Image 1 (cartoon, rainbow, N blue to C red):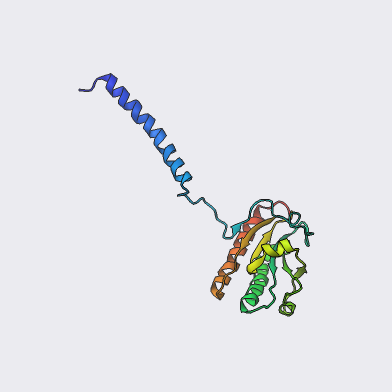
Image 2: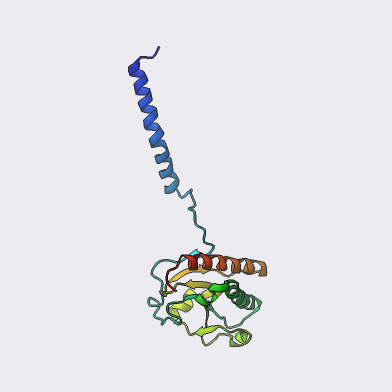
Amino acid sequence: MNSPKKNGRKTLLMLVLAFTVPVVAAKIILNFELYNGGATNKGELLDIGINYQSLDMRNPQPKEWQVLYQLPAICNTTCQDRLYILQQSNIALGRNQDRVHTIIMLDEQSDRTALVAYDFTTATPTLALSRLLNNQEFIIVDPLGSMVMRYPIATDHQAQIMQGKSIIADLRKMLKLSRIG
């Protein structure tokens, strides 16, 4: 039969293990990045500190949410799809569409004829912003002028439609939580 002294040590050991094993396991999982956090955003979050001021540009729509897109030199079908998705995304925001402005960045090479069928606000980007918007990406900007999220180019039509839905979902979440703009 076990003596009370051995039984007490066994109980103490089990109690210590019950509290330390989960902590050690959690630390290992987090250190080796085996756990993907509960992120619900669909776009890629940008680093803190990327804003109009750091890119040496004046905010074209201060105190408003913005979706940026740089028009390429040749607006092919992918570009046309992206412009259409921007227009439809704004319409899909419903009562919040007046809080979000689509801004098309135009440089001297941009194919301006592609904008004839659309009513978007346009601006001229600085060189630093042009580099950030390369590869026909969408970027969401908050009312303070900080670049928040990016959406890389999707090549096929169905992927672009899904990306448009992702932009709408992310914008709705941000607009719901935003106390400004």
